[in-house]
Image (tube, rainbow, N blue to C red; front, side):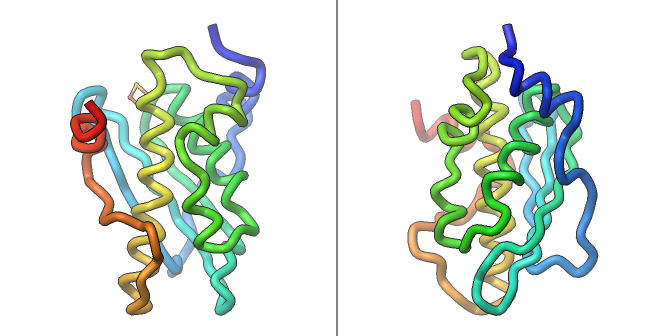
Length: 144
Ligand code: FES
């Protein structure tokens, strides 16, 4: 049911932890399943994401998607990080079962929430970045 990559990132998640004094931190949840994901970014003066850490209280797919998402955004600029959508994360993991697609949306939204926090703290606007939601159900409703 799960790809080898999903199992690998679930069993050996990359970048688990916290960053002290992060440039940006974002937390999102999903009230329906009760899962919560938090992402910490360390962003340098050139807007490059030097380090990423995450903490996920959630299902195996949420852990695998957060792990893969941190790998995909590390070393990227904040604008490039916006291209790390839930689809990109799913593709990098060789897919997810349909009932687990929302878990990858949690990863996308956690990236956006951390970028939003970074932008707020620095008084900048990141083009194309929408104000994040606390509960991804709001996004799922928008898509329906
Ligand atoms: Fe909700 Fe995976 S079941 S994030």
